[in-house]
Length: 67
Image (cartoon, rainbow, N blue to C red; front, side, top):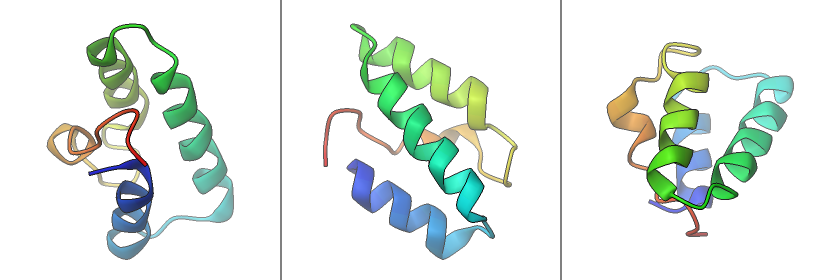
């Protein structure tokens, strides 16, 4: 899923505050800057796994670079 769909998935399935949303958008943007998409995904997994109840399988549904 692309970034917009992933964010909607987060909003629909997890209790998140505005502050977390901003951090999440920033983390995704940072991860997209990695030359190797797998390194970007590893970064996101390290940052987000378990933070709001989301797990690595759910995080890895995001396809970096897709809207």
